[in-house]
Image 1 (spheres, helix red, strand yellow):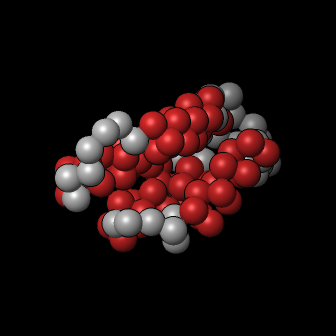
Image 2 (cartoon, rainbow, N blue to C red; image 1 turned 60 degrees about the vertical axis):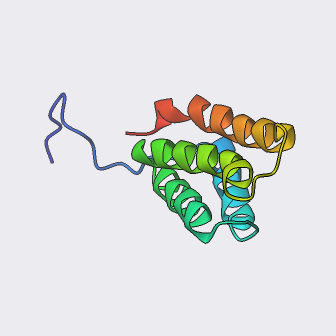
Length: 103
């Protein structure tokens, strides 16, 4: 078979270990939440990233922002949810570091 420069090869792409660990942690954590919809979006975003696709990052990030804000807006809980911001922010940053491996 002839190789053509500029055309994608059929060789399988290896998922980075950090991305694999993050996705697995997200799969596990998505079952433990307040809003089924936002956790479903997080899970879907992680699944898309598992398949090395960038749109999953955007979906996951939007879901995380909603999850952090939801308790304050929906339940009227006062204060800043620092734990949620730090945990979600850490995952978003770590996923962001893996965007170079996604298409």
